[in-house]
Length: 439
Image 1: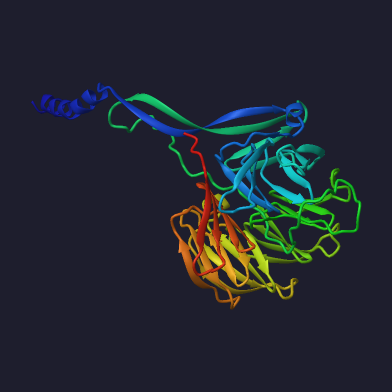
Image 2: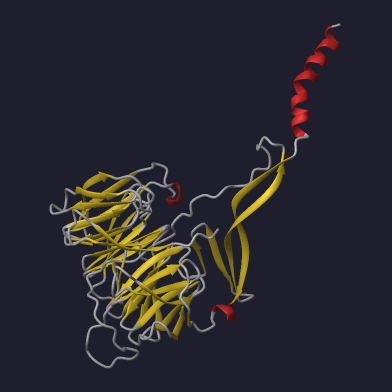
């Protein structure tokens, strides 16, 4: 008698499961999918031209030269805006550049990466640009966001992966516990923005060949650069090396020296005669007083973290973000202040706890620090080693900033913001270029 009773009880317990499996429900799921892409080398090397202005969808690096504002559309091209009036930026054109991550501008020549190439573009007329030069970078692979690319030299093709947002409606068992596809998650900012250097910006002038002894003029960008300009040199870093390009003939960049840097290189920041290179394990300092022959003079180690850096006078300001995308296990989030009065002996002065710091910018005595979804924080650094909070903007996504002539440009996943910071205790919003959602 016990055995039939046992099977009866088990059958009763299993009945809801069996009936549940016969339910017929529909569930809509949103997720990212990764689609392989192959780009023939011939297609990659079609001449760069201008096209009509487009909506900003996935903004990356930010750069300013004279009245023009350049916003990278990740892996696709550059949005050009006339920013003569920061309260009302005007879209001018879109430059299609496959595989772009970074750019820098010297006189009237814009330099941008395009997978394995560095392209030189004459931007005297931003609405009608023309490619004037191209050189191979020597880099055969790279990472952009969560996707990797590599060059197949045998078949002369670029292998890449395109992220797409997909929406799918599927039949389910009504419980929603089976066959769950990955949902959307935040795009990790590969972004290695740009640099706020010591150089001034002047009006555009023709310099396709050397015609005078006038010093070249360069643009300005944020703190997360992979490009840096100094005299006749362009420095480009990837994950493991720094590549030098000679710009003596600006429209014909020439690849020269390669300096191996180890691994997990993130940013480069030029200041006076030095280059400050941020990696996930520390900051390297190079003496570039001989620009074509930079020499490492110091290494400042730190906990494994993402690591952009800016410099003012005798102090470097380094944000460390202990994110898993940075290969970090300690989840350390701080603003480090490093004494670099002697660049060969950098000394940590103070670590300031700061939640999820990203890019930063300095216009002494004001320091701006981006904090991703936590917004923007403004500090008074009148005492360079003791930052005092002035103001926070928690409702904007902040990735990188450029403080320039009392106008702060701030870029994040939701768009570009411009603030008047004539009064650093009371920033005033001037304009916003919104991001168009992909779905």
